[in-house]
Image 1 (cartoon, rainbow, N blue to C red):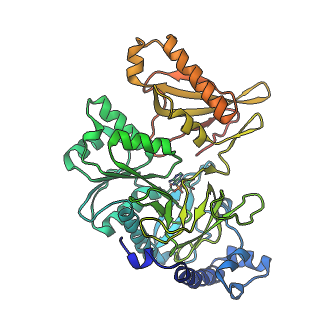
Image 2 (cartoon, rainbow, N blue to C red; image 1 turned 30 degrees about the horizontal axis):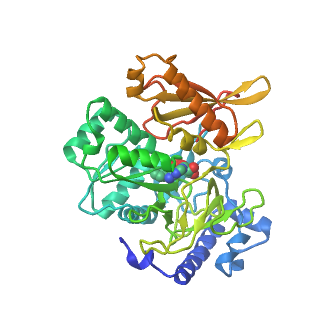
Image 3 (cartoon, helix red, strand yellow; image 1 turned 135 degrees about the vertical axis):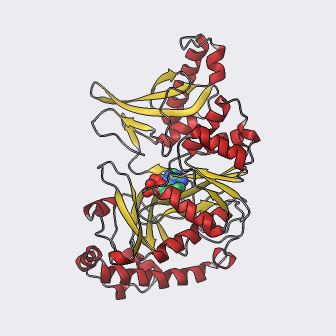
Length: 442
Ligand code: DLL
């Protein structure tokens, strides 16, 4: 472990530490961020009302819209001379959501990510290939500083230029890699295209996240690359990558950095807490951040948590893999479908390449879903590149049948030849909403 004392701390000690830090954070925002001062005043509370950790529930929520309304720096709690870094995440409105970090924030973040890399199986002696995008996005620099803090030899390759990535992997022989699951899959595909066997690389573990992915995608990546694929979670508003990560030993839930983030899981409608093990919306309060302390941030991400000790020995709260987002649920003729459910089904069907897009369209006044999939190269060659071939039509029927029986809605399926759907260097765009002008993201 990177920091055994913290990582195996008893729940009561951790709660005491969280309470202390919560009080400091509440005081910081009350005194330095007019937005929060006003919210506290409206609720008739002051920092003195926070008498226990559970009193977090007295505090106001923060939503993405609040960050947008305060664009760019309205929620910063320190003067600009203390801000050391600015990141942002792209939004549908065109303008990014802006987040800031002091020197201490950057240093804490680096330590959190260093700990995360060790949790994922990384060692100081590793060469570490960082294929997350460098830039305003927190993925590249977030993993970079954590890797440096740990002391690995980080290769800051960023996303894109896939052939060069492959040369570098072949020549530098990294033990670890990180990137979005969809981009790592592109690297694998390109390796296969070049006649290389992705199982032959030096890689032993991968740290993948920043976009929805399923157990089935994990199985695909682990098999194709002969590595352990570890899920990492985070979001810029709360810090960036490293808010939670799975351990190499158990790969059974993501360990939240409890010493820096206080998690609540709430029913998104009633905003009441749900029991451990029940799905709800993740809500985070930062406990150590200086430049952009955030109170009860409603992530829109759906997961459950457990406080059971993990078999790796760590005691921190564990969250499940994300089930979806409150805003990515598709409602097709009254039936709720999560894109992740569609991925789960598709990836279990033989003959398909694990890349797909979900198009939302209108048929008359009814919403309908078109699934765009790609057949695998060897099947394409087998059927003589004929998509009308009986075997391809049978595959189409299988997909439609599986979708109908699992997701309970009929979906038109469009089978494409290999390589025809878009590839991305970062977060994949899985859902295309053709019903209105603005596309659905995530
Ligand atoms: O994606 C931070 C990050 C970078 C996480 C690198 C992991 C690795 P944002 O661009 O602000 O930050 O997007 C945050 O991405 O609210 C989730 O909906 C989604 N997301 C992040 N990690 C995962 C994951 C970064 N492991 C949003 N599984 C979050 C599913 C994820 N979705």
